[in-house]
Length: 79
Image 1: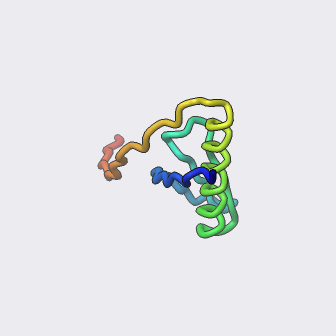
Image 2 (image 1 turned 120 degrees about the horizontal axis):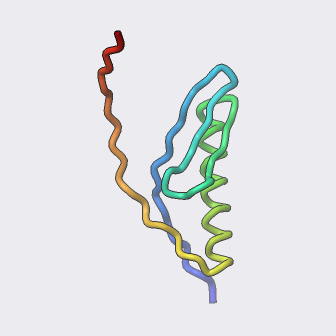
């Protein structure tokens, strides 16, 4: 019998710096990736998340449920 595919939807944070892009998945500790372009970075973090979940499933470990993420801007005054 074929195993049913499960779909997960996790928030990721993508940051840009002088060397390219860096992505993390806050819900999956230690799950991060990088790339030269934004698109490459999204593809790489998607692979990293899939591998992370496959590994947890293989070890019969629980996969954390995706959380809601809020993005805000704060104003900081420095003297």
